[in-house]
Image: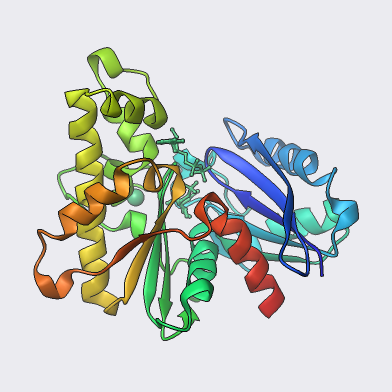
Length: 289
Ligand code: ADP
Ligand code: BMX
Ligand code: ZN
């Protein structure tokens, strides 16, 4: 089966064809509409699927947000224009005329990264540090979805109860401190208004302010990793997303976890599938089902 894979994130929507012999081709990317109203998301999905759908036998989707019974609802409405009960599966089936399989983006990436390592491990977590902070858990070789699709939403565990208000309504979520959006929101003075990518550039140029913000993000993720070890006794934790994969970031998280009690330390690895972990995970999941 040739599958049209789509990854819907808070910043970008990417798509590619993945052939039955695992060749990824025709990779394309568009910006996620600024206010992803149902109409704008519909138009973006038409734009990205139209050139590719004729070559595919099915569609596999990894999407930010809670995915339950093919319906998408944002947990953090700031990340996806407050989409609620968006019929993603039905919409894509109608646009493409093809069968569709859906997963949350980080759950999908967790599945791909587990599939790559499954001979050596049985329990792991994937964390994407991107627009938000997403997560996916594998326990005893099983991807955890939860009855309502929420399992693994690690970005909305609390890092600091006195921390900033998260778009989900809680105070001090990991996402509100460590995500790309959170990194940008903490910038002041010479860095005010810059995005996380620009703040990383400033960090590599020696900006002390950028260093403080990025180290705070990395140590927040390291605390989350130690919490995951305590909860599921993970064999490893895999990092992805454009912040997670940014030059120097994983080393900061690894340095911070070495400050934790030994029993709560765990190997922290960069995603084997890099930025395409969501695309691959969606396809591998679709083939399995
Ligand atoms: P999505 O959330 O749509 O899946 P990404 O994984 O690309 O997309 O995450 C977007 C976030 O990553 C933004 O906050 C952006 O500023 C940041 N970002 C993008 N490229 C880089 C980079 N090279 N280094 C650090 N941060 C980056
Ligand atoms: C948010 C949440 C998660 C998602 C994570 C990473 C929404 C719209 N999304 O915590 O479902 O997995 O962001 O998403 O509530 P990304 O856009 O950063 O890749
Ligand atoms: Zn939250």
